[in-house]
Image 1: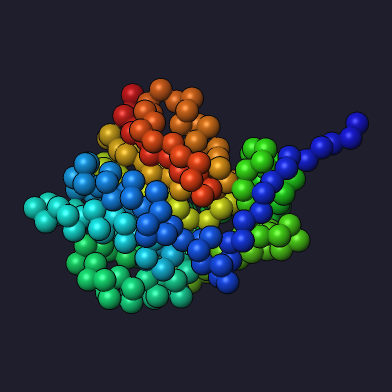
Image 2: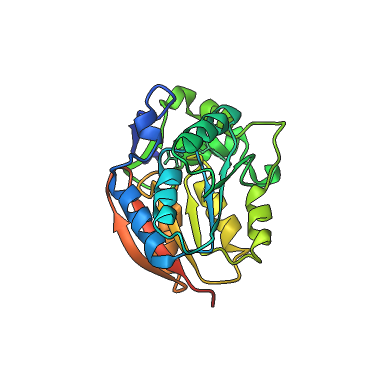
Length: 242
Ligand SMILES: C[S@@+](CC[C@H](N)C(=O)[O-])C[C@H]1O[C@@H](n2cnc3c(N)ncnc32)[C@H](O)[C@@H]1O
């Protein structure tokens, strides 16, 4: 029998193409997040994947800046120390450091990070969908994804620390970290949530959150508020525990 591999579309996502990595200030996703923050009036927000701080993190801050009457705990998690340092500078320049608590470390426990073999299966041999996006050319993909989360000296499982600080009842979770761990992160937080929470997932037509979106569509605890094919797709959904 001839095995036919699922077709993937490769993004130009690397440090030399920051526009593929980051959410543009004027993008539909950035505007939706800003609007969501103003509507939800959240008291706790947790974000993974700060990157340079100028995309989704700044969009959340713009939303919070329009709500001076509420005091929100907004944690954003970034594993790469260079990205984290650049984000501190960018957020300070924008006057947003009073609104956000940037953290340097891994969102997940190290024990949940996939091996090179698992990354190869998920992003090359047996991707979770047909015609979805993936980052990096095939020959370097596994290595780049593996290295993206391989930071031995930083703290790990920051999601758990942030979740416990609010009794596992954040009002908004924005997940936008590495392409090969999106669904792992999604399930990790879902298992811990104790209250109603809005989810904003970036890259739902991408290996990052394709499976998370399929899960959301099937799970009655979720109500999809917005689904878009803009850029690599995004979704905003409300989770109500059973
Ligand atoms: C796609 S970029 C995020 C883009 C950002 N949200 C924006 O709008 O500009 C992904 C970022 O997540 C970081 N990252 C990847 N895996 C991570 C993890 N497990 N924990 C924390 N940060 C992670 C990467 O270093 C990178 O800076």
